[in-house]
Length: 218
Ligand SMILES: [Zn+2]
Image 1 (cartoon, rainbow, N blue to C red):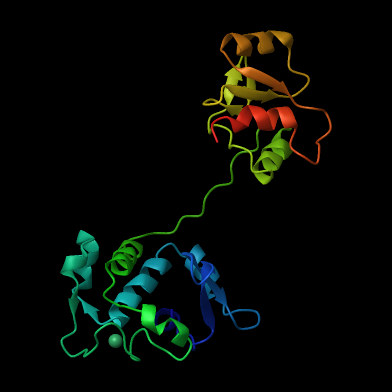
Image 2 (cartoon, protein in one colour; image 1 turned 90 degrees about the vertical axis):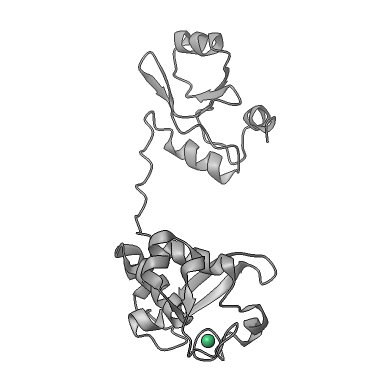
């Protein structure tokens, strides 16, 4: 980051999440008030993240980057012969800010190098928002997600031109608005779906019957 964006050290911070002992992801945030805007550039400029990763490898005293990135092969990374650096030094990864992590820092860690090679060959795309389902079921899609119920199948069911986005194919369950015709319901049942009719009012808790229908495979 510092090399690519000319930041002062300490302008962006990173933290392991969810905790120091369980490092599932890295949270990166801007520490200065208002922020220098670099993180939004990483999202908006498709090649920026690759540049940052490449600069990181360079900083870690690696050479032969073009070939290693093209081949996605950490075996092709060579170390600058003048580096005099084993796992990390104050010219590469060690700093006052990451002192608590010094004993975990290892610039030769294969997983770290592999990840940086991948990022160095990546481009950033922002994901399109999922299309709003018809029938005004959007609030239900959000509520089902918020309640932590199983995620509906990606592809909605379509019966006689009626689009039903709340379908769980593996569970053979479909949730339908209360104005769906009895013919559609009969068809769904003939396809071995259990049909759950959504109440008119959105409840604050997940409907018990629906939760039960979706619980079996969890
Ligand atoms: Zn070093």
